[in-house]
Structures are given as C-alpha cells and as structure tokens.
Image 1: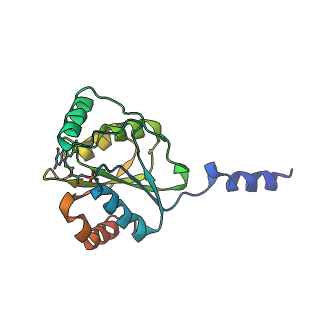
Image 2 (image 1 turned 120 degrees about the horizontal axis):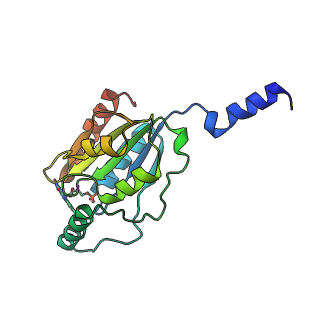
Length: 178
Ligand SMILES: Cc1cc2nc3c(=O)[nH]c(=O)nc-3n(C[C@H](O)[C@H](O)[C@H](O)COP(=O)(O)O)c2cc1C
C-alpha cells in the first residue's frame, strides 16, 4: 500500500474523521423530556439516543421519587440497557435532555457520563422540571465531564413542553448548534 493510500484510509476511518452534527441523548419516564428531545432532533436533523434503565422505575410517581432519592443518596449507577452511545466520535456537540430528579440528572446519566467520553465536545443540558429549573445539573455536568465544553442550558417546565418549540429553536441558535 502506498503512503498516500495509508493516509487516506486513516483519514476515512472514524477516529480521524472530522466530527460534526449534534447527538441528542435523553431519558424520560413520563414523556415530557422525550417530547422536548424530539423537538431538538427534528430541528437539527441529527440522531437521538435514549437512556433506558435495565430495572424499570415503579409506575407510581411517589414510589419513583423514593427510589430516585435513594439512588442519589447512595451515588448509585443504575445499569443501562445500552451504555454506549453509538458512534459518539462522529458528533461534535451533544444535547443532554433530562428530567430534573431531586435537583439534578437522574443517576442513569451518571452511568452514561462514565461510559461515554464527552471530552472536547460541546455539551448542553435541556432539562424539564416541576419548578427547579436546571437545578444543579450544570455543576454536576462540569464535575462528571470536566473536559467537555459546557454551553448554556435551557429549562422547560414539564407541562409546557408542547408549547416550547420556539424557545427551543431560539436556544439552539443562541448556543450555536443550529
Ligand atoms: C423521581 C422524580 C424526582 C423529581 N424531582 C424533581 C425536582 O427535584 N425538581 C423539579 O422541579 N421536578 C422534579 N420532578 C418532576 C420532573 O422533573 C418533571 O415532571 C419532568 O418534566 C418529568 O419528565 P419526564 O416526563 O420526561 O419523565 C421529579 C420527578 C420524578 C419522577
């Protein structure tokens, strides 16, 4: 193989391909964040990756809050059905769409952060919530992904997600991913 052929084969390989585009990673228990994540994906035309825990949370809201509180207190890492986002190296930005659970991400995101290297990527939080806004999510993101380039997040009240299209569009333009 000539040097030129080796060089072009290397450049075509994923590790050397220039990254671009935005991946949407989301978790949703009751649908609000799923709807918000879909708005982002449809607006940007990129891919979407859903975090699904191996063990489902209880159907009952209050019971779920108890399980989630315990997981946070114990710094748990709930197992994910698929831990690694496919072809993460292809993307240069990642939108993390998450419900607010006890002031931050559900612990399933911590499992995700430890299994996926977001170093060097532009990363922003889109959080749906019941009053806490972004809570501590951005501080936690900076802690778990210290080498990511953190962009400004957006908080949407859970009940308002279906009227949030314009706000989401404006935010995506504002942070420069659209
Ligand atoms: C386990 C649990 C903990 C929650 N903790 C908070 C919280 O600390 N602050 C808040 O504003 N909303 C909290 N909520 C409300 C959710 O963030 C809100 O309803 C969200 O939009 C749900 O998103 P989903 O439908 O995608 O699951 C909590 C909900 C659950 C189930």
